[in-house]
Image (tube, rainbow, N blue to C red; front, side, top):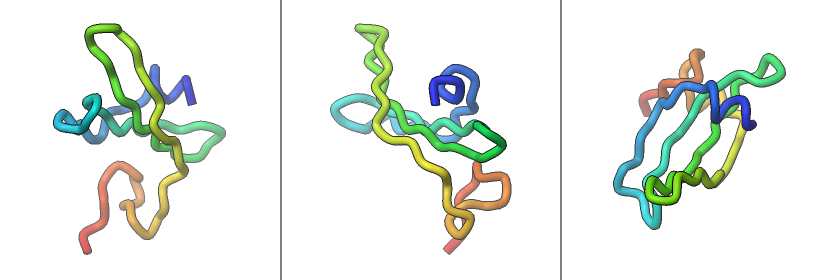
Length: 70
């Protein structure tokens, strides 16, 4: 998961999230797509992992970066 945070691609930026702005990061780990949501405190330079999950193919396009249209 740390590898995804450091080297992954930010696919969504939630600047208005509270208590901290957050980001959805996409990466590949063990040949599987992984999404990691992190909050970031810019003042303290700290990253807080909110959740990590293997994205569902029914919700995400095959690239696992784009949400499917409903």
